[in-house]
Length: 198
Image (cartoon, rainbow, N blue to C red; front, side, top):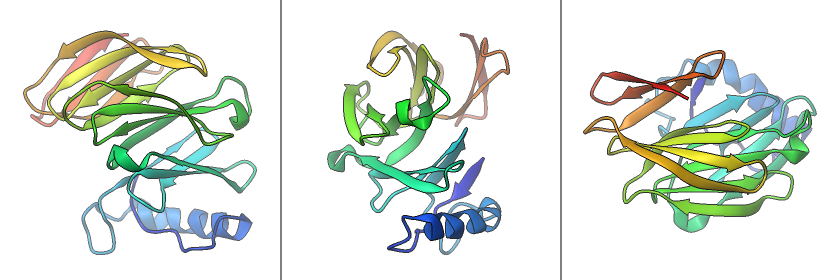
């Protein structure tokens, strides 16, 4: 689900703030990117957490939907804009979760959500990383130049490059994973879709 970015009012990091965010979601879901009042930055909704653009373009605010509270803010000032954010849980609680942020500086940042601590910065490209997916033992990210990076993910620890593939002369906009997690589709800026066994 993709939403246009709308700033969260200051001082809303609490139960009342989450209510404001939650009540805004139906309206944001239908706001086209780039329309007046939307900056074009993406918000991400996955599992029990809600990841929204933070106070700056290099930050992501993390909210717990189940517990209806603000969890943390993750971000690195010199990373440029966060273009995509994804997380995985090693248990049923978000406390053990990590977030992977694909950034404008061509690096992937891995964060521990419960402490807002940076676990790793992995530089992959000389151009922005536009999208990604993080699974229990693997991750994949793509660049604005059409490179796809398959990564090994040691749960709660580190990411390492396993394989790099160029699939397009233009960038990759989004990934989609088949329900059994065995086939990955990459939607490219040139209008083509590439499929991978994963």
